[in-house]
Length: 492
Image (cartoon, rainbow, N blue to C red):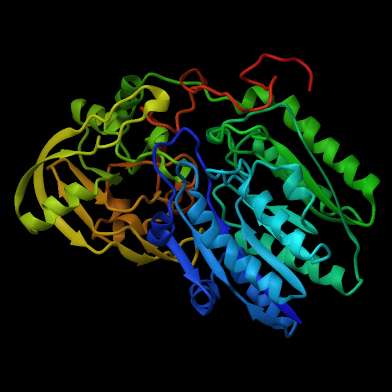
C-alpha cells in the first residue's frame, strides 16, 4: 500500500499587507521529499500522526511536501503551485490513499479556497482516491473541500494542542474505511455567524460548549468524528464563519442530526462570539495596579499568528508612557533593526526607530516607528525547538534575532514573523519569562499553550493592527450576507 502524506498550511488574512510568497514559506517551514518526512516524523503534528499510522499499516510512505507559513495576506499563485504540484505529481504516479495536513483558511491570488482547489485537482486525477484531511479550528469550510475528500476533522483545542490526536483519529477512520470496517459518510453546514477569533478559546465560553457537544457526540454509537469550526473572520471570502462537520459510519441521518444540534448551539450563543473593547490606557493603568507577576499583556490586534504585521508599536508605547517596569516583549518584527544591532554589537548602546515599518491601508493606518535607546543585550540566529504542548518537537526559525534592553523593558526583535505560543521565544535569547513582572505578547489565544502556566493575570490591550477585533475598521466585500454581527439578524 502506498500512502501520500503531505502538509500545506496557511491562514490567510485578506486585510493583511504581508505577502505570502514562496520565500515566506521557506522562512518558516518548507520541506520537499525525504526532508519533509525527517522534519515532521515524531512531532506533535497531524503529519506526524499520519506517518505513525502508515508505518503501523506497513505502507510505503511518500511525502512530497510539508510547507507552512505564518499567517499573512493571500498566497501567491507561484507559492501555491510549488506546494500543490508535488502532491499532484504523486497522485498521478498512483497511490492508494492520501492523508493531508491542511489549514482550511487559505486564500490565494487566484482562488478564495486554496484547500478546496487542491482537493478538486486531486479528485480530477483520481476520483476514487481515499482522502483524509485535518483542518485548523479556524477553517472556513466550503462545499469544494467537502465534495472532494473522504473523511475530515478539525482541531478541538485553541491553542491547538490536539493536532496529533485529531490526525490519528481521522487517519484511522480512513484506514478502517479502506478495509471495510467502517463506511465514512459526512454531513456539514455553516451558520450566519462570523465569530471573532479572540472569542474562540476552547477553555472559554461560548466555544467550550460547542467542543463539549462534539466530544459527547463522538461517544454516540456510529459517530466517528465531530468538529465545530470557529472559522476565520479575517478572511473576507464568501464562506467565512462558523461551521460544523460530522462523520458517521454509514448513517447520513445521524450525521445530519448531530450537525444541526451543534450548529443551533453556536447560533444561540452568537452574541458571546463578539469581543467588547476597552480603551488601551485603561487596561495599561489596570495592569500597573497589579502586584504579582508575570502579568500577561496581550497586544492581540498585532498578532502575526492571525496575519498582522507584528511591528505596530502602539501598545509598547503606552506601556512605556505609563512607566511599567520589568517588562519583556515577544516579539517585534523589524529585520532592519536587527541588522543595526548586529553592526553595533553586543553591549553597545544604540538608538533605534523600532517597528512601524509597514503601512496597513486596509484599516487606514500608516507605520509609526518608536524611537528607543537601549543596550544590545543578545544577538542570535533565532533557531530553537518547541518543547511545549503546541507544535511539539518542531524547529522554529525566527531569523536573525536581537534583544534590546531599554532599562525597564527587554524587547525581542525578530527577522521572521513568529507568534509567541511557547516560552522559547524568550528562553532562546536568555530571558526567563517567569521572573518578569510583565510580558507583552503579540498573541490572541495561542499564548496560553506556553504562558498560561506561569501567568498570574492576563489583560487584553486593544491596540492597532490588522488583526483587530473591531469590525467597524474592516471593509467586508465578499462574505455572504446577511451574517452576524455585521448584520443584526435574529434567526439563522
